[in-house]
Amino acid sequence: QVQLVESGGGSVQAGGSLRLSCAASGYTYRTSCMGWFRQAPGKAREGVAVIYSGGSTTDYADSVKGRFTISQENAKKTLYLQMNSLKPEDTAMYYCAADSSGDSCSFLWLTGHFGYWGQGTQVTVSS
Image (cartoon, rainbow, N blue to C red; front, side):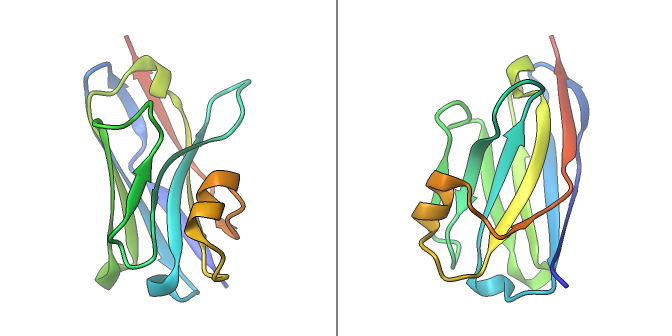
């Protein structure tokens, strides 16, 4: 059974930092494309960051470039999202996503059609 469990969300003031974690189990972690998405109330889900299989390639939404960093620790089967210089507009539910179907990570990042999703962790940034 595939499980993705996020943690690390919380409430911070603008300019602060948070580190989200996503613990993965139940599938072939090393061959997966993984990403972070977020959804604010009343808004569509949007991609935040993605890390391609092997970990050598990453991509970010323009709104978070230079502030957020996606990384993974294969030994712990854990995905991370380091979020610095947080802004009120970063407030959202953040979801971890993974896919091991072999589909292009570029396609998955573009469409959001990942096969596995976590339950989400709330991030609230106050001004």
